[in-house]
Length: 265
Image (cartoon, rainbow, N blue to C red; front, side, top):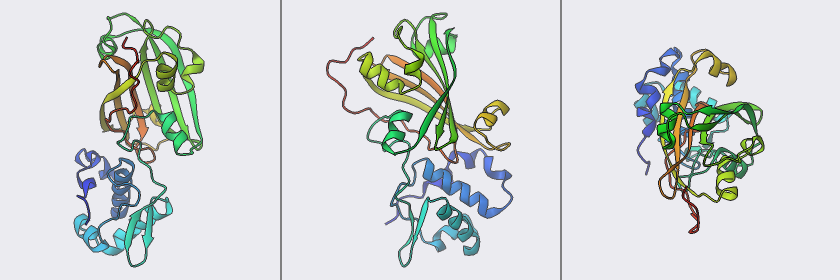
């Protein structure tokens, strides 16, 4: 039995960002691809029948098959004769909904070649927005880290992060090149219990589009993330811009295996 078909109400549709695609099968292709990347459809899930999909999209089966063939070529879909279309075993969502993970942790588990380009690593004065997000005083010093994330030689995410200097005074450029979660939990012994996440689709600025090597008017997902410790005190605030066509959206989930002796700062 098929689970509810979620991608027909995906935020990109509501905001009309796919209206620029004049070729119908391309609209269907990008809608399905975003639904897979967002985790609405996961590996080994079966799609509804081609007749049902064509009915939902109000297109012919020939038009639908063009979109499905593109997904097969991308390695996202497998066609099994006599059984239908299935999400490929190679597809992994950004989080499996069993625990909050950072970029480096996920990609390491997924055997991906990853790289972080540090665009900025500096001390700034906290603006009212950043101070509120980190629960610190206005004008308090914060680390600002801007990283461009790469997967298999493709830029997929621009991440801007702010961390309190007073709480983490020994943070270095070397730490910033790796997992900030790993540094905070293993070096500073502060467990991260989870994150409050808000995500929204938008058309990026020219600078962000250039960094992510996107074509003009290609949408991104903006993800604002406030990671908190076991006392619900903010530890990290990040604003990420993700290539929504090739990089999954993240969800709010609890972090597993919280150490009983972890510190609350």
